[in-house]
Image (cartoon, rainbow over the protein chains, first blue to last red):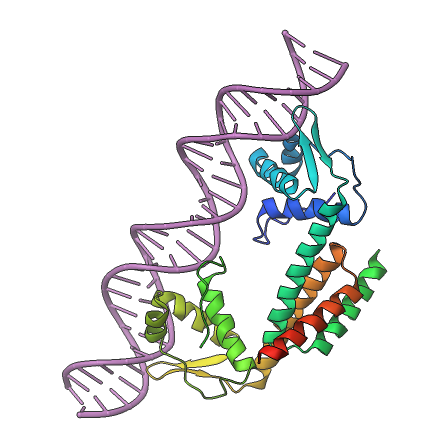
Length: 125
Length: 125
DNA sequence: CTAACTGTACTAATCGAAATAGTACAGTTA
DNA sequence: TAACTGTACTATTTCGATTAGTACAGTTAG
């Protein structure tokens, strides 16, 4: 399970959303897997149930999970959802590229940074 | 001169900071160039002078500009400042790479996106 | 010197998004 | 029936960003 960073300034709501998206992207959570209940996760993170519920609503709106009243929330096995996540990641990354470019980084600079970064990450897995 | 986006949610303060950083990175503003006065820029952007002053304070703290009481604020010609900006841009970019990587983008995906993005940007200049 | 400009330094008030608190309703299951 | 599940509200709190207002200090032109 992922961690929350209360100091980062990033909304808890978004952190929970991204946490589950990553768990699904990494294959740790697969289609049909059940998520913790709203109240259970809120308790675990010492966070308000409303905040968790908001995250689940966002995840469901994006097709990442589906929720059933009285039963629980489950990881969706919709492939379109995964591609939507990829598209979102692409957009975010392109925005980062534009920003870095405006600040003076060249394409070669960025490619070098990517190779360094992904190489390090591989060692950690 | 740059524009402000009041809808984006990004703090106006930061937008002004980044605006001048980019103008310097692009060479439009060079060492010794005078910035608009705090009050003049606040008036132009229809923004509170305190907000502009905060931006100038941040820029000065990062060595991008220097301010002289009674005279005005000027672009610094300190090369270290430029490298500090580059370092900051690098850090932001590496964070974006990590995030994209966690969401399933491969290094090749990212390199492809960089080439597409920077190619488009060049056409616009 | 004076007036008008510069940057700087405060405190108080306002605004809005995020999160919390609390309650209630509806469906499932043992 | 009891205990769980998700869902839907409203009210409140909290915090950061911004605004508002005032004041002080240095520079420059008249």
